[in-house]
Image (cartoon, rainbow, N blue to C red; front, side, top):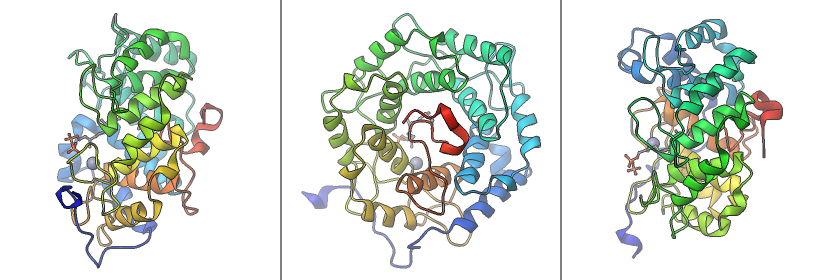
Length: 327
Ligand code: GRG
Ligand code: ZN
């Protein structure tokens, strides 16, 4: 029943190789233009946006083109008295932005002093619930994304024993479905983004033996569509960001060979905008920094030699992680 699967056609005129330089220009322009509509409208996710841009440039070996001091100072002003970081100065702390702030500082080689690390760790600890799960912020929503971000943050600031790891993994395993995937919470449907978060959480804590790797890898491999692109769950359209969520999960599981590399690269290349630069979710759509960094990161996982090698757990260059890299 192949014809029933949702998919897109790749236009014949689509790019067929990596257009690295136009992407660096796209990212550089995006972060430099503080008056653009896109920039103004994205304040609620600014620190995450900064990580996407800085990481895309580091992966592209163009980090020195970014205004490092200005960005480091800005990120530092997003820190709150609870120890966490918000998306912009004066915004409440959130674990998503706390991780992105730490990642950005590490990419620039900025040392996070011991007192700051302790304060960040105590913020992250405050998010863990009795059942081992994590909320993202004071709003109190629980999601396996927040487990991954909490474990990753504590790993990166060298405070791995701040959290109750045993309870955290027990909660992750309650989100493990019989199809091999993972959801946001116990009983939620499997979703590739959530699989990345749960497999990443297991890898950070050295607990990958808890799952059947082949079963999870097969569920991930089924995300590949005829076009070569990957979707996030059955009956959904392919999207280039899943090239990262799915491929990184397979890399962590040691099963990269479960998907068709050639077809997948064809889809990723076709998502590039050869005029504006950047990647869109699908061929022909509008490019943005989010899809750009994850498109580039996926190509790095495939070993593209013009890019810096990426770490599949932390989505940062191996270079910037140094000894913090686990795999
Ligand atoms: C990068 C180290 C690192 C950590 C990040 C926050 C996080 C950890 C991961 C997010 C994983 C995730 C849930 C990704 C999915 C994002 C996305 C495109 C969601 C869209 O979901 P739907 O249901 O779209 O709107 P679909 O594709 O299912 O139609
Ligand atoms: Zn997407």
